[in-house]
Structures are given as C-alpha cells and as structure tokens.
Image 1: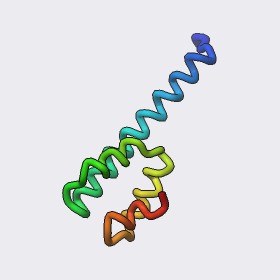
Image 2: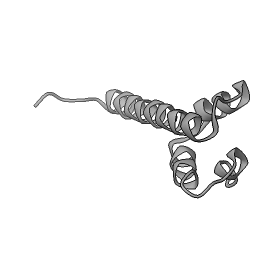
Image 3: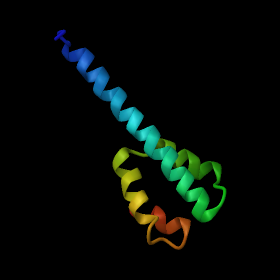
Image 4: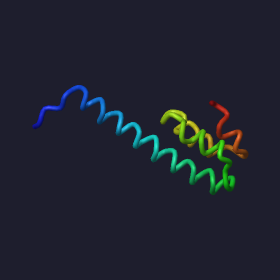
Length: 75
C-alpha cells in the first residue's frame, strides 16, 4: 500500500468534498427546474456557492415547499 502524505490526503478529501458539492448542486438544480421552472442567475449562483449541508437541507425542503422561497427558508 503506497504512503499518502498528509498534504495529499487533504487534497484528496477536498476534491471529494468539491465533487459532492457539484453533484448535489446539479441534482437540486434539476429538481428546482422541474418543480418551479427556470431559475434566475441569482438562484444558480446561490446553488453553486452553497455548502453540502445547505444543499442537503434545501433538497429536503423541496419536498414540502410550495414556493422557491420556502426551499431556501433555512439559509
């Protein structure tokens, strides 16, 4: 098993986190489009800047939300 330096491990973990954020952002964007129609540039920017935790909360909120504002109510 090859040795992985701490710096390499941090880089790998950061890459995984970024990949998760991008995947969750893309998924939520598709869900929002299907539920509420096309979004504004502001909404897209908000999705891209969000943390994984925010995206997960919004993904749960979309299940009960009747408006786009209700999806983002917790942040």
